[in-house]
Image 1 (cartoon, rainbow, N blue to C red):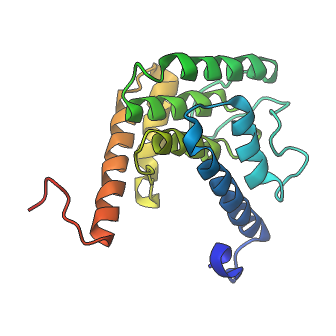
Image 2: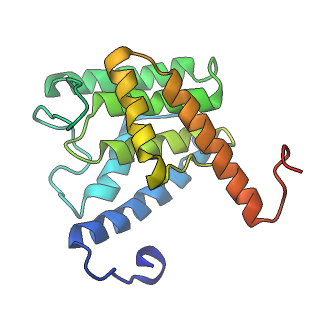
Length: 197
């Protein structure tokens, strides 16, 4: 309703409205990159800038300038001085490994690496999901939709990677979400999923 009709939702903070409108702009930008099949640091910054600029224009699309703590994670994120180099390493990793990995595994690992760098003061999860979905779309897959009911499993799999270096649970989780998204689209089109009878 916010994006299609411009209607606000009663009782919700104004920040939620700004984030929703900004997320719509970032989503549109993500779709403009589908044909490029690359993940660039500047595109990541642009996505963040688009969805965060009405919330905090000064920090939108800029690397964080102070340490962050994510409640419940127990992980120590990189210092601000390390972010630029780590983001460039992420871009280099994406260019070098993309054709070596299955597209869903690549997208999931890309998300994990970005959210673990945590380059922005806020909005790192949303940015990581946008970038992951961009990688999936560029390789012909559907979006990996993570509904609220799956949030605990999603966060648990991220923490497992950050604290133990184990990406298997997260890759499996994202693969399941891609399959469920594809099933949902087929259901909406009244087409049976190939394994269903």
